[in-house]
Structure formats: structure tokens, C-alpha cells
Image 1 (spheres, rainbow, N blue to C red):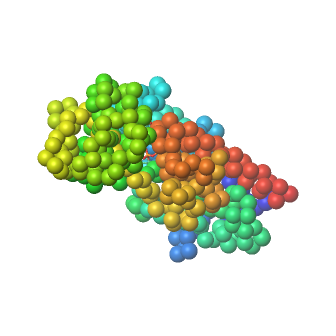
Image 2: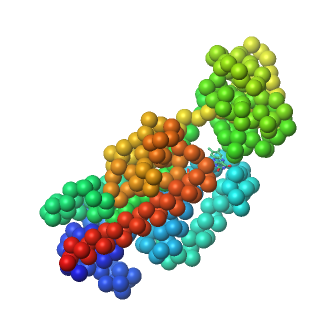
Image 3: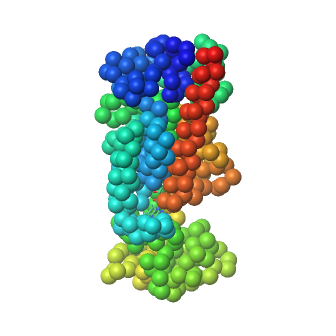
Length: 367
Ligand SMILES: Cc1cc2nc3c(=O)[nH]c(=O)nc-3n(C[C@H](O)[C@H](O)[C@H](O)COP(=O)(O)OP(=O)(O)OC[C@H]3O[C@@H](n4cnc5c(N)ncnc54)[C@H](O)[C@@H]3O)c2cc1C
């Protein structure tokens, strides 16, 4: 094996450090951390070099870390602790976990990860992600162009606490945040009596009257809710109603929604009120983290990161899973815990496969 190729990742050590032996890799020394990890262009070394950094420990990131931990890949999973479904008391539509509180889901998953010694979970916030400059330079020296082949590029991951990781692969699983309709009371009841997804919340309102706020989401939501609710009311909030809705239509503007017993009181601009069990809304999705921009990742029309069928983004060695990403063929992400788990597993498996490909390429280069 050539002197300046690392065993695990197959990427060149930027400082020409000797290749790791198995034992060396398992027990990194302080001096290796100081001298063996890529530095950014300011010259500051990373605190630790790791095979994969997973950013975000929602269902997607937790599963990606588990998948990588199962094959003993060296992983740091960093999480800021603000899961999208945190406002909901229970999550649904996840087999074996139907009705589990979101925090409990995360607690169980972290407990499972604790069994895998190559997986470290850190509570913290990643603030910046970038290509490690000196590794790019090292690659150029041997005629490889960044993006020309998958693998080989290294990334620097900066955390809010000032620590830095360098890594060959990054799995982004930072999720999205919801921009809610600007109607008083909606934000207060969000995740409880105001919901967006009948698969997540519909059954809890079974046999009662529910409302849909807004004309645009009404056709799809009304059709989904019709078998569940005793009555579906579409509150168009001043907009024209789409034709053929399987619902009662109210075109008055909504001035407020408030809790009323175990349901919602809807106040209308004309002075009328309506009691419903719950209100469904459509939200606008925004990336929860700035890494797609920082890394210049290709995006879909939805604003989510574009990935291929194996969760690869437009940057080599960067994968994305969960709500924040989807394939180009879909108009928007399939946002659910089960889908996030599935894509997290795929992203983890792809990262593992590309680590192996890097290692094999490194061996071939070394002759
Ligand atoms: C109110 C509500 C209720 C829902 N109920 C259900 C349900 O019952 N069933 C269902 O299947 N789906 C439900 N969903 C959808 C579900 O929450 C998402 O599909 C799922 O959480 C997506 O998982 P994820 O891992 O992609 O993202 P998330 O669960 O949002 O996790 C992303 C993680 O990344 C972390 N993160 C973000 N930025 C950074 C950073 N810079 N550094 C470090 N960490 C960072 C966040 O803190 C967070 O922990 C619900 C959604 C909402 C809004």
C-alpha cells in the first residue's frame, strides 16, 4: 500500500501521513488527530477525521448511522435536536411504532446505536460544511478532478461548539421546516389540532367533522379524509373553491382558530363560527439547514436537494435522505418517518459501498 493513501477511505492523506494499519485506525492517537486530518484554508486542522459524518438524527439520520454502524464504519452523527414532528404528541403510520411519542422514538433509536462502537452520537449543531481545500489540491496533483469520480473528496464539518470534523463522506439528513398559513391560532395548535397529513393525524379525528384550510390542498386532502371524517368542510379562506370537492365549502375568510374542548373553534370574517375536531393545512417546506447552499448541491423545483435513486447528491461523497431530498421524478419529498428511515438506510448503504470503492481504487492506484 502506498504511503500516502489511507486504508479506510482510500483518499490521500493531505499531509502525506503513513497509511493506517487496522490497529492504528482503531486507536487514533492525538498526534494523528492533530496532523493527519485535513485542514481548511485557514490551516486549522480538524479535531477528528472520520469516515462518515451524518448530520441530523431524525429517523433518516438515525437509520443511516445504524446502517453504517452495522458494517463497522466510523461514523459521527451530529444532531441539533429539533425534529420536524416534535410538536406532535405521537407519531403514526410506522409499523411497530404506531402511537409512539417522537422523543421516545429517538430515545429508542439512540439506545440501539449505543451497541455499535464505531458510531458516535453528538448533540450539537453543524454550522458549516465545505470541501477540505488541501485534499482537493492533493487530488489535482494526481490528475483527478473533483466530481470526476465518486469518492476521493474530503469535507470539513464545523460545529457550533468550535469543534471540526474531517470526513470522506457526508450524509445530510437535516430535514425541513414548515412555514404555516398565516392565520391566527394555526401555529398554537400545530401538530395537535392543526395537522397537515391524514396518514399522520386523520384517524385521531375519526367520525367527527374536520376542516381543510385553503383551496389548493383541498381536493387531495378532502378525498383522503372523506372515509375517515363524518363531514369534511373546506375553508377556502376567500379563494375560489375547486370544482367537485367531496366536501361542504365555506368561502368566508378565516380570522382565527382556537382550542375549544377537544376540538377547534373556527371564527369567520362574516361573524360565523364552526366547531370541528381538527383543521388540516398545507405548509410550505424550507430546508432546515444551509448545507445544500454551502456545498452548491443541485436542487429540485420543490427546493429540496436532488438525489439519484441511491441518495447521491450532485457532489461526490455527499448523500441526502429524509424530508430534505427527493429524486427528480417526484414533485416533492414523500415526507414520513417510514420514508425517512428507508432513504436513511439507502444513503448509509450507498456511503458504505462508495467507501469500499474508494478503498479498492486506492489499492489499485498503489499497484
Ligand atoms: C406536526 C408533524 C407531525 C408529523 N407526524 C408524523 C407521523 O405521525 N408519522 C409520520 O410518518 N410522519 C410524520 N411527520 C413527518 C415526519 O416528521 C418527517 O417525515 C420525518 O421527521 C422526517 O425525518 P428526517 O430525519 O428527514 O427529519 P427530522 O425528523 O426533521 O430530523 C432532522 C434532524 O436534523 C437536525 N438538524 C437540522 N439542522 C441541523 C444542523 N445544522 N446540525 C445538526 N443537526 C441538524 C434537526 O435538529 C433534526 O433532529 C410529521 C410532521 C409534522 C410536521
